[in-house]
Structures are given as C-alpha cells and as structure tokens.
Length: 177
Length: 164
Ligand code: SF4
Image (cartoon, chains in turn purple, brown):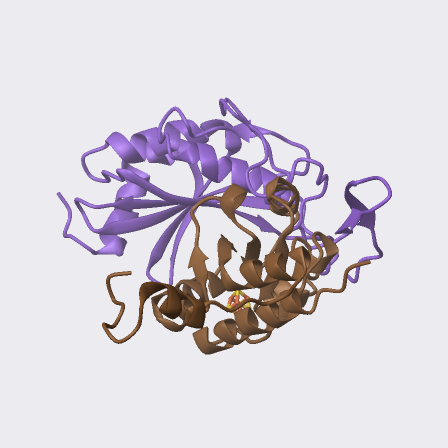
C-alpha cells in the first residue's frame, strides 16, 4: 500500500502495473497525475483504476470536453476520478477527433451517463454504449455545440413569441466569434 | 344588534349606520382584484431568493399579496431570474394556463433584458420577448423593498385600467 496523498508514489506504480499496456503517456503536473489513453483502452483503464487495490478510484467526479481548435485530433475528453480511501485524484485524458464516437464509461461508473450527455450537448462528442444519448441542457431544436471555440459568443438563435403564429420562434442571428 | 346602546332604538341606530355609494361593476371588480393579488412565482435563479425574502415581510400581506403554490390559482406571475431557450416555452405555457385577467412582473436585470447574460447564446434577451410584462423591478438582485414597490405599482396599474 502506498502513502496516503503522495501523488509521485502513485505515478511510480503506473509503469509496473498492468497500466503500462493501457496508458500511452503519463505525467505529474501541478500535483496531479495525468494519464493519456487511447479511446479503445479507456474502459479497461478506468475499470483497473477502480478495482485495483493500489488505486481504488471509487468515484467519477466529472467528465469534461476540451476543444483545441487547430490541433489534430481536435478534442480532449478528461475524466476526473477521486479515491476516497487513498485521498487521491487522477485525470484520465482521451484525445478524440471530430465526429468520432468514443466508448461510454457507464458500465464502470453509472454517474457517467449525465456527464457524457453534457459533453455531447456542449462539444458534439458522442459516446457509444450510453443508454440515453440525448441532449441534457439545451433545447431539442438547438443544433449547435456552444462550447466549441468556433461557435459565436452571442449564440446563433434568439427566441421570441410570434403573435401572428401564436408560438415561440427561434430567429437566426449573425454571431460574433 | 347586540351592540346597540340603550339610548336609541334598534331601528334608529341601523338608519344612522346605513350609507351607500354608486360605482360600476368593473370598478368594483378592479378594486377587488387590486386588493387581493395572488402571486405565482416563476423563479429560475438568484432573484427568486429575494422574492421569497419579500414574502417574510409583513408588508406584502398588508397589500393583499399572497404567494400561491400553483399558477392556475394566481393572477400575477412574477418572473425572477434568467429565461433561457429551454425555459421559454415552459414560461409561455404557464402564462397561457393562468386565468384572465393576469399580470406579469419581471423581477431583476436577467428577467428585464438578460442582465449579465445579455449576450449569451442561451439566455432570452428579456422575458418580454416571451410574455407581455406589466411591471419591471430593476436591480441585480432587487431588494425585497423594491419588489414590494413593484407590487404597489401594479396595484396602481390595475386601478387605472381603462376599458373600452
Ligand atoms: S438579476 Fe442578478 S440576482 Fe437576479 S437572477 Fe439575474 S444575476 Fe441573479
């Protein structure tokens, strides 16, 4: 067993456990351990991190998307895991290209369902294996991904009530990027 | 009848107390409406806290304003907070389900014109784009006193309604 709260000892375990076959790269920056993994070994990696006695990451705190506009592949999906038993945090990073689905983490952490829906809503990164892959925050007629860097800051539609048609209408507007 | 003083007969005292006034049915109805304002809150963000804070002040009940749990029993809809594209259809249908006559108070900068989120992609630039608004209460957030002032303004407006 490792010392509680020492991130470097956790990092030393990565090359000597079965993580070495799953992780393509790892680094410790600003007191956090980052693991870069390929999309197809993502589920195996987080399953290992959850079940292994040295890691015990029982909780999935959040899933975030990151848009690097001019990089190829364009997006990062970042999984923040927390180990309550060992008082440790870890970030698992998957690089993903536009319009490429990645495997869902729902089979490992059930809470991933809503986080993945949010990433889908905001960045348009889809997850296969998620039981309910639909929008969670924006309205269903909204067809853009607002947190992408090439999306206009003030949005692309404005809502108003149309007295003649007696319904709410979304009018397209020119965006400021 | 039981309070009649012994110096006068019951008939006399009733005659002295009787008085009358002439009005129209509309004016009487407006007077009744402005004296019993039943509020349905549509609180979407932080302004809702200030609105409920005003509820704790006894002034609100002196004015005849009471918070109701369901909008189908209310005359006044108070929109407290930002309205975004997803809540705009909900707000519209809540407004349409309210019985006539009905009034709307927009509370706070977000409800008036989007406030700090004015240029945002999701926030409607003012709830008057979605429902007709009668009284605007400004501030971010407005003080509970400002909300009470808004109720007083609404009462004045209800009394002054001109009918064709
Ligand atoms: S006006 Fe200010 S206090 Fe009110 S909902 Fe908007 S941000 Fe919150």
